[in-house]
Image (cartoon, rainbow, N blue to C red; front, side, top):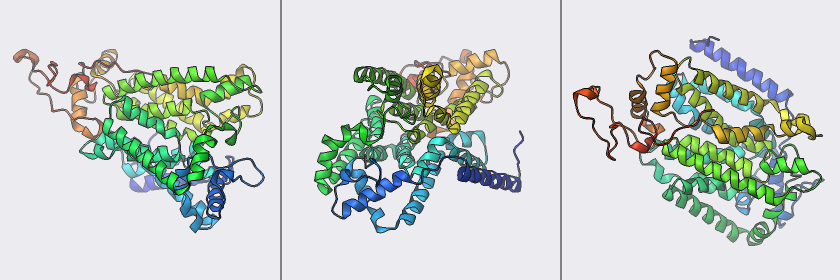
Length: 469
């Protein structure tokens, strides 16, 4: 396929694609009628008129507010506007959050590939809107994209350096105070020894929670002692939309309740795999992969992960695309990774799990109704981390020819120097003087590779082999 190169051709393509996506979104998918936004709106309205936050139920249903009290505090401004204005504000905030998440996740490889920014992000935005978790988040009026943007803001701060990392933790702390799932990212900061960022995130989350305690002491007591532990408030665990480890067990044992012991053991195993992989990711200087792996883990270990919560899979999809683009032109690895990325994207747009919404029995039900769980698990186990020079060299030996970034070690180090915002540290250029003409210099840690420290993961001195799909 040949993409238009002129501005007019690109503009026509973007307008046509946006129109097609808009028509699809308006006619094909299930519309949720901003149901969750209605829960938020009704709850805060009920609260300001003297009611209790966790006593409110949407008329005719058993659904009520399930987030911590601080979330209700942040939603109080909705009481100043009418319902239609609340819907419009929700759409605007979700659009801004989606744009921020797209930019932070893809800006580095768009810049590296030399693609037109406005054209690439316009096309990416249209494709992003087709993802089922994104469609559902917007049509439910959910907060998932806003939380994703808050967390990815911290990922950007940590990956860019230049003194910005001192502000990292603010977004994660706010997100964790609004909803419990992003609290896993505080664990990520701790396990990767980002003490300052972890302290900031923890302090922000605690301060926000204390603010809610001061504002709504009775609601805080009810939430932390009762509502938080009552999974019946959010719906049936066996419902096909619950794409978590707990959801898999619930569908297997329905109508009986799933074993809490089996669930807990599975969570422990998942957390061990996550800890191992994120430590390797950070050792290789791959901050975005670390955040992506944490988002996958949050979805898997949460007792309830509705389909619209799966926006946390998007960073992993971006890392997978980035890994494919980093591979040499025409290489087997590039084709394999990009093929997986396209396949996962198509499945996440397909709403395939709903084929088993009424009957998830049998082998086909077990495999099909848990499709998004298998995707999350596969990405957790095999999401490729940033390439080391050793892997590049192996790829070149299998596919001889000029590498777009030169030799293995030189190419990896040149990348680290040319794109310092993608790593925790930049690397000085390597002298082209042949090794035979002078003694091999040492890095600051005694490594014979002058380009970077031994633990950076970009050169043959890396002690952390990376994973491939």
